[in-house]
Image (cartoon, rainbow over all chains, first blue to last red; front, side, top):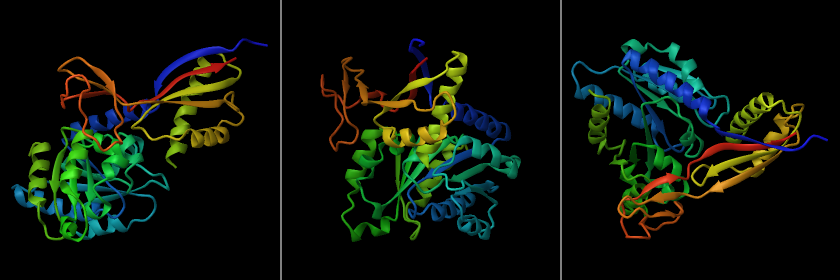
Length: 223
Length: 116
C-alpha cells in the first residue's frame, strides 16, 4: 500500500479563463476598441438600455462613435434581432444553456466583428446576477443594471456582482412611486460592497438619467 | 450549469497535478472558497463524481473550506472579519473608520489534494 501524500496545488480555479481574458483585452487594445460587459437579471432592461445608450453616445459626439453588440443568450436570438433592427451591428453568442459568458466564448466571437471600425463593443451577458460576476470576459469595464421592481435588497443577496462592477445603472426609476424601493438603502448597500461604484438612476422608458450615464461611459472609453 | 463548468476546471487542475506527481489515485481535493464566491459543496461533489469517472480522481472526496471576508483598516492597522451579507455599515472595530479595505473573501482556489 502506498503512503497517502499531501500535494500542494494553490491554483486559482479561474486562472486559465483570466489568461484568455488578458488576450482578449490585448486584441481589443490593438484594434482601439473598448468593451463593456453589461450584466443584470433577466428583464431588467439590458436590451433597452443598450439601445438608449447607443442613441445617446452617438448623438453626443461628432463624428458619431461606432458601436457593435455581442448578444449572449442561452438559446434564442430575439435580442440580437432587436439590436439589428435598430441598425446596429450585432452578433449572436449562443452559450448553449451555459449561464454566463467566459473569455473563451468572447475570443471565438471576436472574428465575427469588424473591430477595426468599432469604438465601443457592448457585451449583453446572460441574464443572471450570480455566475456572470465570477467570470472575466475580457471586457474593459463591468457594468450592472438593477431595475427598481427587483428591490433594493439585491446587494445583500448578490454581493460579488456589486463588487465586480465599476458602475451600477438603476433602471425603471419610473416605477419608484409604485413600490417601497428605497434608493438611499440601495446606495448605502452598494457602496458598502464597493465604495468606488458609480451609480446612475435612469428610466429607459422616459429617458431620464440616460444622458448622465452616457456621458460617464464616453469619459470612460476616452471619447 | 455554473457548478458543472467550474467542476471541469477543478478536475483539469487536479489531473494536471496528478500527472506531474505520478499519482495513481486521488482520495481528497481541498478547495478554498471565499464568502463572496457562491459554490455549493454538494453540487461540486455530484458533478465531480460524474466527470471524474475512469480517471485517477474517481471517487475523490471534495472538501470546501469557506473563507470569510477579511478587512484591513489603513487608519489603525486593525484586521477583522465581517460578513458582507449583513445589512449593517462596514466599520473598523478598532477605530470606527469607514475607509476599510477588503483583503480576502473572493477566493476560488484548489488548495491541495491527498493522493497515493
